[in-house]
Image (tube, rainbow, N blue to C red):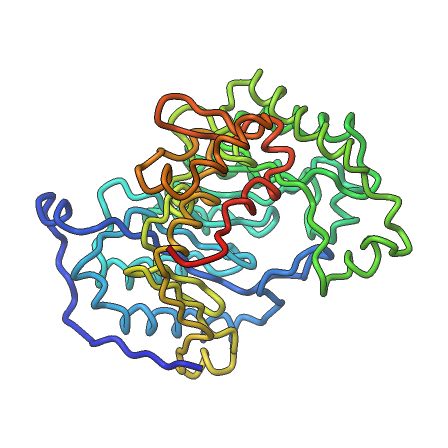
Length: 396
C-alpha cells in the first residue's frame, strides 16, 4: 500500500478573478461512508456508525485536506460533491467545517456547484440552514421509488411521505437546485408502477432527475436472492421490460421539460450536474475519504478503504495508476459517449477508431453529425457492448 504526504502551507487567501482564471478547474469529491442502515442492493463502501466515529472521521478528512494543500497552488475547485453512504447523517456544522477547511487551502470558484447527497428522513431545518450558510447550493435526494412497498423491499429507511417532507423543507429553506435519484427495474415492478413514480416526482418539478436501472451486485443481499438462477430471479423485470422502462423514462420526462444529457440523467435547462459532467469530460478531480478516487495530472489514485487507519491519520493509496495514451483515449471514448452530445472527432480519434466508428454507424449504434459522434437510441440500449468496442488491444 503506497503512502503519501503533501507539504503543509499557510492558509490561502481568497484569489482574485484573475488568479482564478490562471488555475485549472478541479472537482472535489468527499466520501462519507456512513449510513443509518445498509440497503439490500448497495455495494458502495458504506456502513452504519455512531456519532463518535463520524466525528473522528470528519477530523481525519480535514487533516487529509490540509495534507493536500499543495493542490491549491495549481487548481481552483469548480465543484464539490459530498457522496456516500449518507452525508446528511453528519451534523450540519460538520459539513460546514469540511467546506471551511477546504476553502482555506483550495480556492472555490465563484459560483462553484456544491452538492450534498441526502437521505429523506435525515434532514432537519437546522441542518439545511447550516448547509445554506456554508455555501451548499445543490441537494441530491435519494428517493429511489414513490411506492412504499418498493422502498421496504430495497431496505430504505424512509417512506414516500418522509421524502415529501424533506423535499418541501429543502424548498422552504431556499434550495433551488434539487436532484431526485430514482431506480427502475425493481423486483416485481411494472411499467405502470414506474411511470407512477416518474409522474409523482415530475409533478414536484425538481431541477434534475437521475434514473438508473437496478444492478444486482455481488456481495449484497439482493445478489443472493435475485441473481440469475437465484430463488427469486424471476421476480425481476425481463430485459425487454427493462428497456421499455428506459424508453418510458425518456419520453415522459422529455414531455415534462427534462432534457436527457447523459444515459441516466435528465435536467431542466441549465441544471445539468456539473460535477458528474467533469467526470465524463475527464476534468481532474481529487477525492477525500476512504475509498475515494482521484485523477490528478494523468494519474488515477484510489484511497485505502481501511477505516481504522484513516481515523488514525494514516492516509494511503490502494492503487496508483499512471495513464498511458491508450488509457486516456479509451476513457475519452467510453466516458464521453455516455453524454448525449457525444465526443468530438479529433484527428487521433479518426486515425485510431475510424474503421470502428464507420462500422458502428452502419449498424445503427452511433450517429455522426459533422465533427461529433454519439450513441443512437439503439446504441444506448446496448451501450455496454458499444463502449467496450473502444477498448484497444495494444498501446498507441
